[in-house]
Structure formats: structure tokens, C-alpha cells
Amino acid sequence: MQSELLEEQVADLDTLMHQVWSPEVRPLAEEALRCYNAGALRASIAATWAAVTADIITKVARLADEGDTLVADFHKKITDAQEKGLTSDGVRAMQTIERDLLAKAVEFELIDSVDCRELERIQQDRNLCVHPSLRAHGGAYTPLPEVARGHLAVAMTILLVNPPTQGSKALKEFCDHICDPHFQPALPHIQVTYFDRVRAAGRRSNVQVAAKAALLETDPAGRMPPHEHADRMAIALEAFASRDRDLVRQTFAGLSERFQRSDGLIQRRALIRLCDTDYFWEAVNPALAGRLESLAVPPAPFSSAGPLSTDYAYSLAIVRSPYVREQMPKVEASVAELPMHHKMQVIAIYPNQYFVPMTIQFMHDAGSWVMGGQTGQLFVQHATFLTLETLQAGLTEWAENHECRTANPMPELAIRLYQLTAHLGPERNRLFRDFVTAVQAHEEPGSFYTYPGLTAALDAVA
Image (cartoon, rainbow, N blue to C red; front, side, top):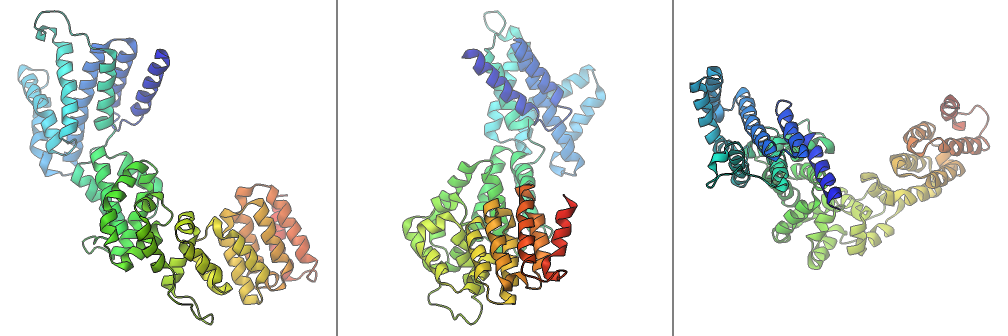
């Protein structure tokens, strides 16, 4: 059991080692790990401290190169000491720098005061390891294996794996990214850049700012409309939640009371953007759920003659969420009562697995070429959610309904559907060939509505 625990601990250190940001510092950290694995514990602690000092110095140099005036004077002291080399003056200058190194790291926001305390313990134990005369009654200091491993894990976790992003600067960079006119909802990029490579305190700050914006629509200093900013922050929150869902949950819980007092329009928009997330619903009590339900459901039936109000179409699209269907049954009931073209308007807003059976039913019910083309477009929008069974069901309805089969956009949509269902593998080829056979049984040979383009696409992979 003890050997298995040791192997697990070493595996954790190996994982952290691959995340050390600086290629110049990584060899020092690897040396500390090799010493630990070999049982050379004093050497491991000394190498760990060497990695800490090298990391901070490297980060100060990087910040100075980027024009950070706060670090300029201290960076000059480092370079002056380095120029003196291994002389008595150079050694004394570097010793002075090392003595102030952790305090400067706090000042430059590379670490915080709690991190500083942890790193000071490494520094103190390093001094005991390389200066045995410091012990009062003689004898060399003999650290426990757990101490050496703990120091290395602490050093990597709170310092070595993090790039030189300062606390307030890291938060500013995150906010700038969200407000960037060229913002893209790339979750992996957000995760790596604004969570994985930010120290713990910075992660909390980013999550808090994102949660406040997504839930309360805080003003981003006039840089963009608050509701659009909130939509982007909700995307970032989902990226963060995939890394630390508990942190996001705790942050939302702390904002729950403020959200309950928010304006109704803000509450409804928050419901729309966050309805799929568990951390949102954990912050909603039954009383608030009732209010949100009344905000989402139209107060009176709409005329079937025209389109559904855009605001309420977005509100009703939340029916896709299992949380909504469980806690707000009136939303699902309202959608069920809508006429077909209103349901299609709601579904088109946010394609989802929940809507797939409805899209198949629409192709069965379509009573005109216009409606047939619209149902085909809607079915293609849901291509990524299809299974072989639902694809077959949809193609069957498509082929059997004359209004769908002969609607102008349908032959091209069939090719698009074939391309977008690649995730179903080669088995789908049989379903599409059966579809072509069924269509050709209804149409004159050579007709555009025998789907020659789809046939050519199928022949190309035969």
C-alpha cells in the first residue's frame, strides 16, 4: 500500500513537471525530482529552492522585457549582479537579491502573502540542508521524504507552473479578451490561458468577475453592451466550470441574494443564457424559480397569424434544458400549445437533442413547399444530434412527404445532411441510399428531385 501511494505521488509530480512554464527552470525542477526519487532529500530541497529563485528571476526579466516599469529597478539590480559574475561583489549582490526575492515576488503580484509563507518554508529548509552548522547541537538536518516532496509540489503548484502573469494584470487581460471585438467562444483557449496558467487567487478573481457579469450584467466600463458582455462571460464560466465546477458553484451561491433583487429583464436574460448550467440552478430557490417561470412564459396567447415575439421565442427556447422542464413545467406546456411555425421559430434559436423528435414530426406535418423547405433546414441544423435511428426516421418522413421532397432547397440540404452526419460512420450510407431509392420511386427519372447530387456523393465513397 505504501509503495502504491509513493508511485501515485511521483506520478502527480511528473504531471506537474510537464506544466512548468519556463524551459530554463524545468531542468532544475527535474533535478529536484530525481534527487527525491533517489532518496537524496537534502539535495532535492536545495534544488527546489534553486528552481524557485530561478523562476522568479526569469519572470522578472520577462516582465521587464514587456515594459513593466514596476520591476525595472529590481531587474537592473539582478543584471548588475550577474555582470559581476562569481566575484565577491557579485556573490554579495546576489545574496542580497535572494534575501528580498520573495518579498519582491509579492510586490510584483507573482505570488500572494500566503504563497510567500509557503515558499519561505522551502527557503528555511534549504538553509538547514546546505548549512548543517545552523543546528544548535550538531548533526546534519535530516528532512523527511514527505517534506521534500511537499516542498517540490508546493513550488510547482503555486509558482513554477504559472507564467509571469500578475494578479491585477491577469484579470485585466481576461477582461480585455472578453471585450475584444474579435472574441471567439473557444473554450479550450479560455481554459488554458485564463485558468490553467493563472495562480489560484487569479482564478478566483476571474471566476468572480465572470459570474457577476453573467448573472447581474455588470457594466464593462462602457466597452460593450452589458447584456452582450454577460453572454460572453457565460461562455467563459462554462470553460472555468469544466476545470473547477465547485469554485463556480460557490461563487454563484454568494451572488444568489443579489440576483433575487435584480430587475426582471436582467433575470430573464440570465435565465436564457444560463439555463443549461447546474451551478445556476443551485443558486435558484423555489420562490425565485416561480418568478423566473412567470418571466419566461408569455402572459397571454399570441396570434397564430404572425411570428412569435423574438423575446419570448428566446425565453421559450430554454425548454431544451432538463432543469427547466423539471422546475418550470409551464414552459414545456406553453411550447406544446404553440402552432407549428411558432415551434419551429423557437427550435431554430438553439438546436438541441431535445428538439430532434419535433423536427422529424415537422417533416411529416409540412403542408407546403415553403414549410417543407423550412423543416428540412431545421432537420439539418440538428444533424450533430442525430443517431442512426433518428436519421432513418427523418429521412423516411422526408421521402414520403411530397411538400418536403420537392421543396426547392431540399436536394442541396440532403447533401449537407449527409456531410454533417459523418459522426454516424459508414452505416449511414445505407440509410441515404434507401432514401434515394424511396425518392426515385416518387419522381420521374432524371428529375432534379431524384437527388442526383446526393447520389453522386454516395457513389464517391462507394
